[in-house]
Image (cartoon, rainbow over all chains, first blue to last red; front, side):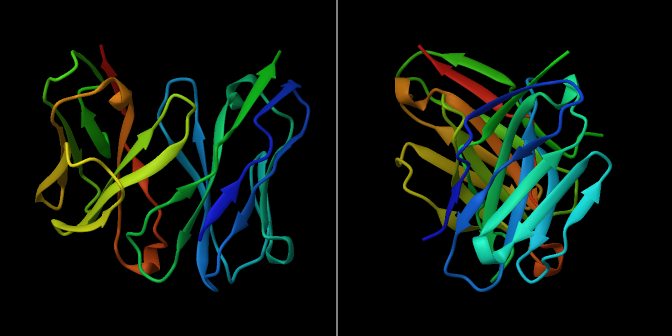
Length: 116
Length: 115
């Protein structure tokens, strides 16, 4: 069965601090997708990144970076120089890659609070 | 233009009533989904449709019935509402082709409160 664990329920940081959100997943599939979504206080779900299981390259997008390690089944998300606008719930998710249109399996989310 | 739009955004109703939530996407996707987010923020799939055909039907009470009149629309009808149905319901859509990697785009959510 597929499972996503986000062990950090809540994280509080002060602006400009770096913060890493952890994500550990379980799957028996050899090919799969991993995702991060952001849910700001306004409530919508915003897609941030998708990673294929066969592509272990790390990715950087502005202040955001993602570290995918198959050996430890982890897909961690780092925000550099955090800002108040980064305050949100962040979800890690997993899906099969056998066919598109399959469900996203979400972790329970990590609530990030950034204070000024 | 909103990519995935849901109406209404808020829905307050009494136990036992029947209500519908509508969802439309203008992204040209052929797969649509309903997810439920409970009070602890946990997100779980309810249904998915591909080209109007039901693909996923998780363990959801029969009181919930999705309907897809065309591939751009997926509505959710709920009969005999119960207190436990109170949640935020999200609609999402994606391309079917694996080339697109199952990236799902979500609507803004419908907050349902059953009194």
